[in-house]
Length: 282
Image (cartoon, rainbow, N blue to C red; front, side, top):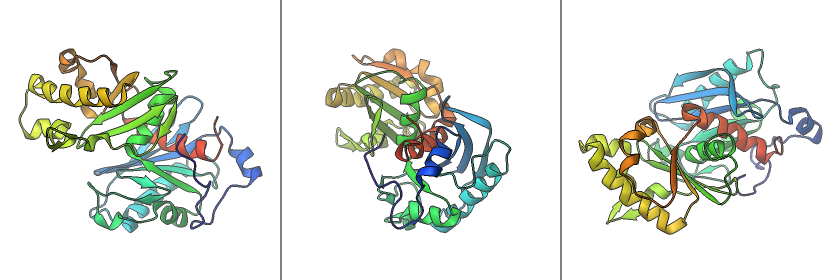
């Protein structure tokens, strides 16, 4: 569970009553994953960590301003809410966002429209949807889902979920609980921001073979291993499907495995985060 914060920020004005908490306890919730190219959502079975029915996706609007993204999110929630298995109309919604989220406010916007900076995204989307909304960093959401339902389930101690994509995302899990906003992709290694050299996009940009790329990953994972001594590394992102190309070249003390929830991890983690924060899941 993320660091404690009020169940519903004062700015959004919507909180669940004790009666509503009981009504929504362990019931499915909607999770939405906001990405640079697409915004996708689904109805999440929180007991199994799986989607009920298909995902629904709409391309991310360009420019991806707060107002335009809020409209797309509303369309996705409307579609999912029309399904037979949909949660109650007043059930909270969980979302991911590709930036640092602190008490519902966007604190970084490296790969999204700069108008998001310092925007209270929880309040914006709560007002637009007319129901409680909580937003979590996208890598944190994926890590939370993996720790509970995927490769990290039942693992005590420190589990680090590293996503290799446009950048390097990370989630820091300790004894199954999330330590939010661990931006380990921005560690400085050899004078460079780590993700500028070791992300999946950097491999393609620089035309590296898998063996050459493995040298950079070795440098990155060895450094993170030294700093945190984790029990387990879980690797996600698109190239996790090609792990057989680089895992054999990595020499680490720490066990390293691929993520299990794949493209559903963000959606599942978003729903799980809001459920945990509002005591709708154990």
